[in-house]
Figure 1 (tube, helix red, strand yellow):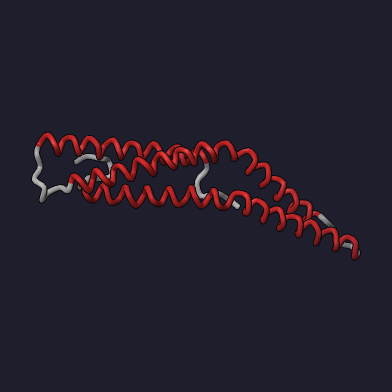
Figure 2: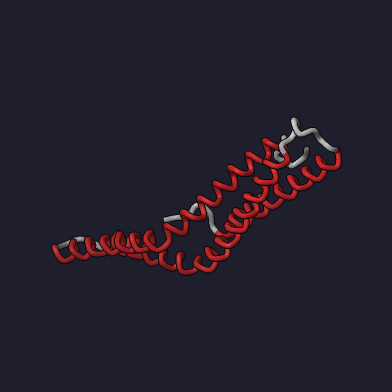
Length: 153
């Protein structure tokens, strides 16, 4: 089982999202100073999306810190599962006992994979959901502000 984003990747995405948020805030300040007419820009909707985006950004930051603390345990459990599979592959089957030993090692590997899934899947799903919510909110903000990917107005 591999996570969608590891702690390093999450940190990189957080930096990207924070940069985009900074660009949107700058855009809003510029729009206020220039007094853009309401029909050109829905400032209230943008501000609501910014607040939602900030909340989700904080949530992902919290998840990233928690995931980073769980990463050693996750990697250790994965290594044990890999070891079960490697041992099962190396068993030379010459008789019924060898065959049963190989079957047991494969069963242990499957059980171990299920343990990892039960322990970490909900957490990994929370990371992915938060990440996708941020991507969606980012797209909406950029569309509303008519910003390009570099954050210029």
